[in-house]
Length: 128
Image 1: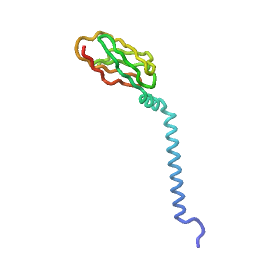
Image 2: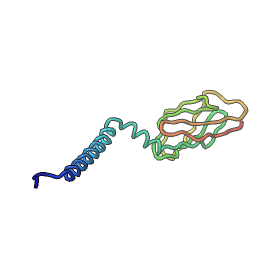
Image 3: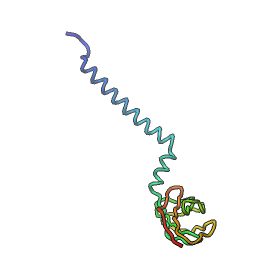
Image 4: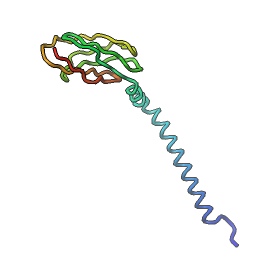
């Protein structure tokens, strides 16, 4: 009888070793990704928590509400997909502010959208 390990035992040990190495590489890559790109993960997280809702609009201004769970720091108002105003005031969660346009709008039907750092509002239609 030969002394030593059988081929089956060697195969099982190699499979276990490869599983261990693959799991270690996976854990290491996940932690190094978070350390290398934390802003990407944070932006994604904040976007999920962000929310803007247009409450009202008139010929010269728009009322928006931060309906999310995070502070909105800056953004822009688009009327018919053209940027008409920008804001850089902080809007705390559940607070509303009026934003004035750069120019008064004429009579007609308009589509409003507010885009901010962590959220985008649904489209708001207004007929003046």
